[in-house]
Image (cartoon, rainbow over all chains, first blue to last red; front, side, top):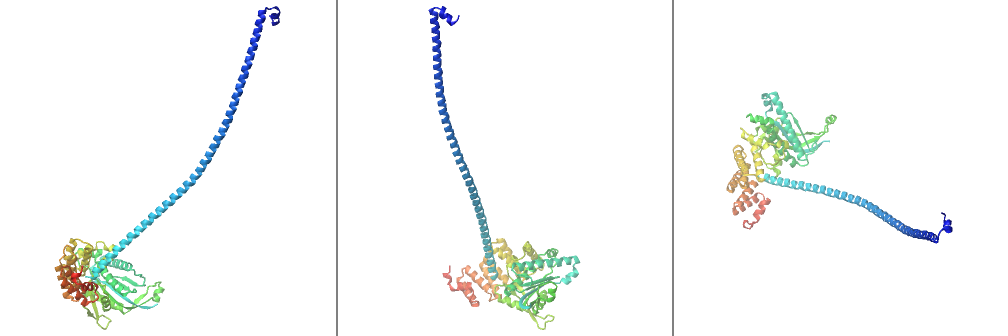
Length: 137
Length: 366
């Protein structure tokens, strides 16, 4: 039976039911549209929020990158400074070792000189003693 | 270029070498000559180096031919050369005794051939001969009467009885002038030599006290030398002068803090020397020294007694006078000691030790 048949041949109840169904369907459509709209709004909100987050994230990323870059630059600076510091420390250590070594050698040389001198004095003393004995015998 | 210099000339040779050449086998004779030349070379080259002679004819010249050694010393100081010649003489005699050849002769109970030495001082001409230059040598020739005389003086050494080191008048007089050489000489003997018209006075060294005889020996010869001297003195007819050298060595050991054993050895050696040596004053002085400074054998009365014996033979000997005065002072005889110091000033008014002691009253001395 066609819808037109219902209007022509059907009872009021059938029509009413049909209308009710139509109305229900319409209501459902409206509700569906509202839900869709709400969903869309939510999605839009979500997108907005996501965009905001994205922006925030980008800024944060930029900041982090900047931070990393500055840290790297600082580290690189520190590295450079450390290298020169290490080099200068190494130089200082070398020159200090050389100075200590030179001093040690100088001290040893002086010690040997003093020891030789003391031996010479001892020999001289013995020579004078022996010479004096020769002269008194 | 020729120039005149005052040289001290020393000749040394092996006594009786011709006779020995007859008695020894050719191999033994060759061994003896090689030992002689090697020893002379070692002693003289070491001595000249040790005492800073330049050599090469500049301030000295020397050579060894067969069993003869000749040394010419002509540095700027004659005193230095005189002292050097005496040391070389004593050292070559000692080194020769210690050679392997002579040690074997000693162990076989045979007599060691001795070295005779003649020393003289005098002017010589030093100049490089043209023929030497042609031969490529720059060494100067040393010529003069003093050299001929030294050679003849050396020939008289076999008549010596102590050191057999004979010296000419010129050398003797220089030694007497140098008061830092403790050498004593015999009375002069006037000898006639071939080619010399007048008689020449010759003196023998009877005592030469010098610690450098041993201390300036080449190190290679110093090892075991004392034992060799001690051994030689235990053999029949030892060379008398060895006692003086050995005693002087013992005195060095005692002065350096030697033990009682050395002091006893020194006393024994001194008493043996008294029995052998004709010239005794130096041995009396050594005995006096031992009894004064030997810690284990100290006996000041004995010391004074020995200094007195030395003075009985040589009354003006300042050294004995000084030692006696010291020994008396150590023995607490203040007055006698002061008198002794004054006596020294009587002989030599500039003697510092006596001047100091005689000027201050004994009771005020520290």
